[in-house]
Length: 120
Image (cartoon, rainbow, N blue to C red; front, side, top):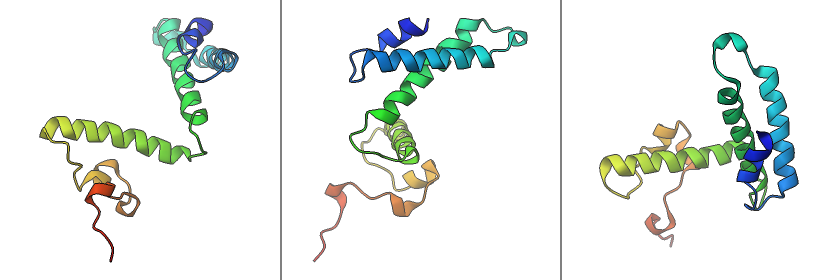
């Protein structure tokens, strides 16, 4: 199961050996965390756990420079919220309340370069 899921992500910039190791470790963690009494079949619990571990591995290792995890997660949330707001408002503009929606400090968010005012 873990090997099959690792092969699915092979060829995306990470060596297959690393992906196989990450997925095998996630399978071991899934075995440890599985609870038979919940009535969920094991593959239904293990597959999302393994896929999550593979995605975290890609998120943490494929950036060109070391970016803190909090910034990576904020970037991911910002893309999702911007897409949702764009769909609901039928416009591409980024709303000013994006930091409020993301629950982050507004001083960390800056308007895109095209919307900044030139400094004299």
